[in-house]
Length: 472
Image (cartoon, rainbow, N blue to C red; front, side):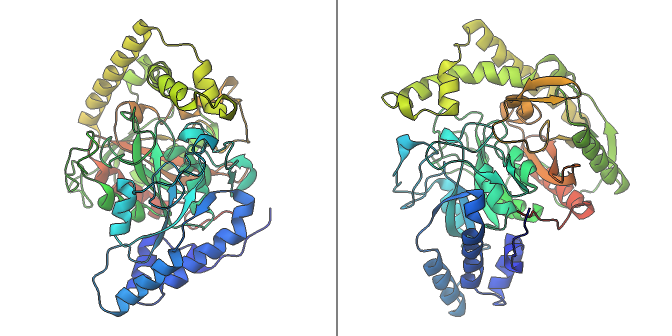
């Protein structure tokens, strides 16, 4: 692997870049150009960026002029950001990872994109994803496969693998992505960045594929730092009058806040119905638990009976086939030769019997009840993000502790929080023996994002891998 030379601007987080621009220690043009240069130098190896947004440098010049004129500026004034190609971007290609949507240019921005722009951020580019934003690896017939910046022979995850690779490689400081079962947190873990899947409905999905069904879908930020996640979340949360799931005011928070007045209670687990977990991932979760305990939190190993009774992945598989299969048939009708991995798999999967679908729905209710009981006693849950670190491209199965399972089951630790809608965050805290990042996941009760952001910021300050970046 050969190192890629980078500038400091390509490694600073969005919060610091915004401060440099605001204090005129760096110009928006310099920041945007640095990231464009990085894209030019690295994207041919990674294929994380699929479309550059026209006018980014012009927008940066306008941002600098506005600042020089003493105009009011937003918290992300002049800072570039990238967007997963399932989010509509006005005047910029949004092709959803499929030839069926090749050349599609929306007239309006998704709500989350518009909110980033209102905060002063500048759209830099769109990032790669699997077909229709559905799969555990970012590969499709239209824009190809994204590679992991830590090892080109490995996946950067899915479905937000282009976004995670772009941020990890220094092509973007901040991005927008979505999560159905793993798609924000898994790619973040695979590439060593941070991602937040908020409470369901917290960030409107308006203008994001698919419009329906979306009861398990979440939009959220991906970034280089926890403080960037917190900043972006504060700008993105709240109703937009179009997404019926987005009903709670943006300023509402049910968490402990940024300065808890009592010891924080954290439970941690690496089993309890999650299936086989790579031993190095399990060890990293325990190290993170030990670090939190050493920082004064009340931390103990836990089990959650509801996860042991109802396997979340099995529930998801039974539920989602019934909800997604009709859309796949409709969208791909007449385009059978343009179907790729997800649509072929979904259409070829037998329908879920109604009785099994009803049982899956009841299983989701039992999971909700189980977590409700858990969060009466604890403020947060610490657990793995994925079953294994970033895997080889095209992997169909993997073996952990002597058990061989379908590769799709690497999402078993993440899918419970999509089924229930609970907020969850992914961040790096370790490295495996192959030099690949290892992430840990933090989950909290509904609308308690401030709790996991507080814990994650503390973990970030204690992280043994803080400041490490990938080479190619």
